[in-house]
Length: 114
Image 1 (cartoon, rainbow, N blue to C red):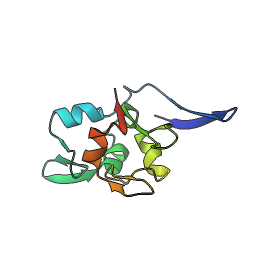
Image 2: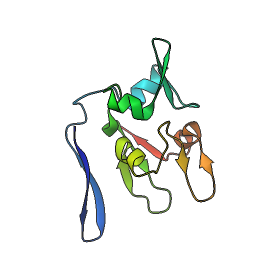
Image 3: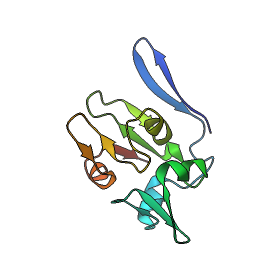
Image 4: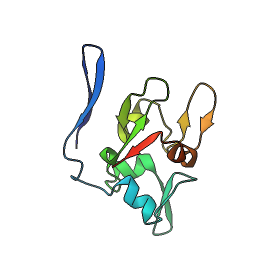
């Protein structure tokens, strides 16, 4: 799957191929208890895997959720949000004021899941 940011006339948007192409959704991993919202790690066969690693391994579909940038309200897919430094490999969000844990971000709707 390919994700990229397209800029037109100062407007930034995400374009990606079919979100069903690989990996489970973030919502499903949370619902099934595979993803710990407090640590940001998936627990599979006793192994703890970060969000970033789970995307690389094809376990998590990066297009199944978006990260909303706090000040501008722009949205990036999970993989691009990690790449751009908006979130850590375990989903923690960094703002100028403080670090927000993955679990706190989920509650504050900084993640948009579908």
